[in-house]
Image 1 (cartoon, rainbow, N blue to C red):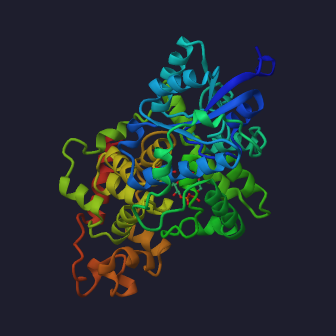
Image 2: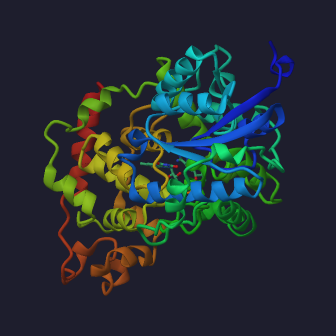
Image 3: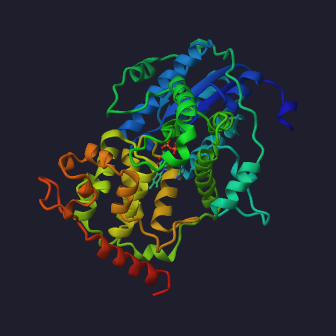
Length: 465
Ligand code: FAD
């Protein structure tokens, strides 16, 4: 039966997950159009929140409070429960007498397992789970090569994505018809609205703030993105990553706003396509494709990881200024520019030859935008494994990266105060200074030797040794 031919529902639950907005929300719009009553629901799931960075957990909870306020302005409210979705979604659907639960479809392995379990629990009671778009620009099954397989190389994927059809951006429903007696206990939401930020410099949570950020970015930053995006401080980037992760903005809203800005938005929408690429890869990995398997993996010293060097990396005291500035900024603010992520990841996986999973886990414990697809994609790219990675013989030189993308050393000095007084010409290589800067460590590795060691290990692992 086509969706149009189905009878209208008396009650639909809209189960929010990584789509914390009321605008451009296909599942919410469909529920409002087709059901007499709509119950918006969020489940706080400890499996997702347990290992989440404090900044991420805070952004999520405060964004939920804003979502609740936005729903209230439309005659509705957000029902929040704490526990396992497999138990609670069917329970709530039964309590409110819903025929259907609608949600925006996610692609991570955990969300797939969770949704399959929720769908079968609902089916046992004669209800169903309907998954709708909203997290991506195109659904993974619609983006296949002429041979019918998933793309494993970014550039052809990007070309195909540009040509792929888009749905229209959806307006905010005027009213969401929720019987408010369904939304009982308010204590969880009330607590969220008052949570203090755990770190400095965090973006203000919620959909309204996200739209303000997007408008300011499109008006003031987008035109300079092509040249500014690589600045190590991140000043030339949009800082929309937490919004895109939690869905306070949809990628379609961001892409449309950029394309309608009247400037060349290509470099920016191309980066959005990397997000899409990594999400599609994660989806296809579940169905057996998208493997990160690579002979290079054997080059990484996962068994005999050097605990001292790893700890120095985590704490930002490797003695390599751009690496230390990046790791300290990450710990202090929960965010890093893409260039800084590349540099610190490259140092861990290439110069220290450590397993990329060590870095992937550390990022997930700190990033406000920690995202399974983008984070794994970024780490695998840098390590030289996974889909369309950086070639094994290209190794970022952290000194040159600093000289090029933080030429005055202002960003390094901000995060590494031990280097505040050092001359500009030594800020990225303080070991060359006539007097060693007070309190700053010597490098944990000698860069040229570490590079040669990595090249030899990769060469032998890739069968060219
Ligand atoms: P902008 O440069 O303004 O880009 C806009 C949006 O495009 C981003 O918000 C993001 O959604 C997407 N995007 C941009 N670059 C990339 C990219 N290379 N890969 C995937 N998506 C991209 N991004 C995350 O959202 N979460 C992560 O956990 C994450 N971990 C990363 C780990 C490593 C090792 C690397 C190298 C990159 C990682 N990225 C991650 C990608 C990228 O660094 C961030 O998305 C970006 O720095 C966020 O800042 P922004 O919003 O200002 O980005």
